Length: 347
Figure 1 (tube, rainbow, N blue to C red):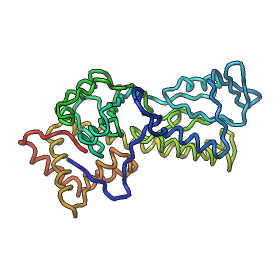
Figure 2 (cartoon, rainbow, N blue to C red):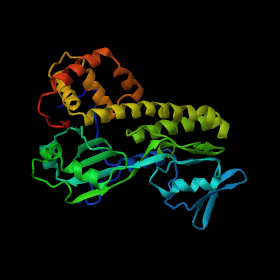
Figure 3 (cartoon, one colour):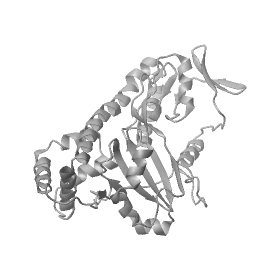
Figure 4 (tube, rainbow, N blue to C red):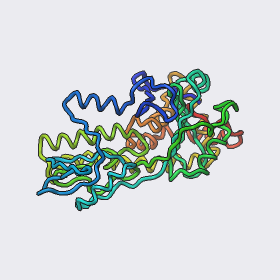
C-alpha cells in the first residue's frame, strides 16, 4: 500500500550523518554533522579535535582533561550520545547521573547504485509490518547510490536480521535480483529508549541522546529541543542545578512523558503484527483510504505520523481512540478473516 504525504508540507529528506557509508567510492557531498559544525564555527565556536580522557571538578567548575592538557570551564555540556565511551566520564563527577536505558538496533547500507535504487524503491520510504517478535520498526530508505535498511526493536540480533531479509515481502522488494547481505556496510548501534536520571547539576548539563530523546524517532530533533532549553536556561537564568531543574528539566519531561504514549502505541502495533486478520485489515483500510481522495484518511495519517515522527505520540494515541477510526478498522479486520494474506510492504 502506498501512502502519500498527507499535505505537501510534510516531506521526507534522506541524508547521511557523515560523507556516506564505509564502502563509498566517491564523496559527492558533505554530511549533516559537518555542515552543522561549519555553521557553529561561523558563529564563533572553536572546534578542538582532541580525545577527552577525564572530567573532574576544579573549585566547583568542571575541568576537561585531554592527554597532558586540561582546561576549566564555566559550563560543561555533554552531547556525546549513547554509543560514545565519553558518556561514562560523567560518573567521576558524582552528581547522581545515570545513563539512559538503551537497546541494540541494526542499520546497513546497500550499495546498489542510484539507477537500481530508483528502479526498486523510487523516492519512497518503505515500511514493513513484520511479524518477527521484538521488531517494532523495519524500513528501507533510498539514499542516492545506497538503500538504508533499518531495524528497530528489542536488542536486534542476527536471527531477527536473517528473518527480515528472508521474508517474502523484503525479497519481493529486490525482485530476486539482490542478496541484501552481500557487500553491505552495517552496524548495530545502541539507541536511547528511556531517559537518563538526573542529567544536570551545577555547571553541567547533558542534552540529546545523553539525556532524553524521542522513542525510535528523530534524535536530531530532540537534541535540538533539549539543547535549546539548556541554552535558554544558561543564558537567561543561570547554570546552577536549580536553574536547570526549573528551566531545562520541563523540556526533558515533556519528551519523556510523550514516550510513554509511544510505548503503548508500539505495544498495540506489535499486537497487530502478530494477528494476521488485523494486519490484513490494516492494509485493506489504508488502501481503501488512499483510493478515495476525499477520505479523512484517519488510519493513513496515524501510520504516517507514527512511522515518520511528524506528530507527538500523545496526539496519535488520542486519535486512536476516535470511534470514527475504530468502526472501519474493525470492519476491514472482519472482512479479512477469510482472505489470503497480502504483501506486508507499506511504502
